[in-house]
Length: 99
Image 1 (cartoon, one colour):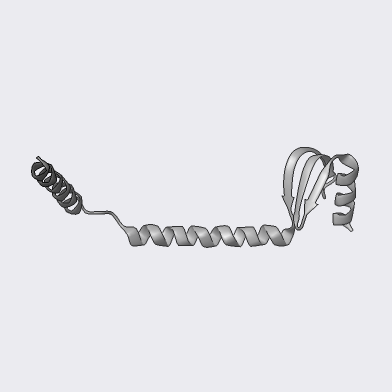
Image 2 (image 1 turned 90 degrees about the vertical axis):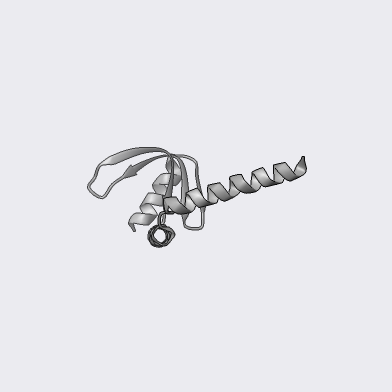
């Protein structure tokens, strides 16, 4: 019953556009469960299932990001110096041959 009252309140309060499980609100006055009222302007609300799906996806992406960071590791200084030396040497050789 509370979601129905919330939607009706939003419809009467201002411009509202709902697409699937997302509610786009231009302006509304919302009554919270503890009786307080909140004036909302420009917001986007997700249904409970959409919010849970989003939270799961964020956790999955954070875990994947952490795994990628750990597998990448730090590049040792020796490899960086070797790659830089090879690049400079190859560039010098090509420039010498071009003349």
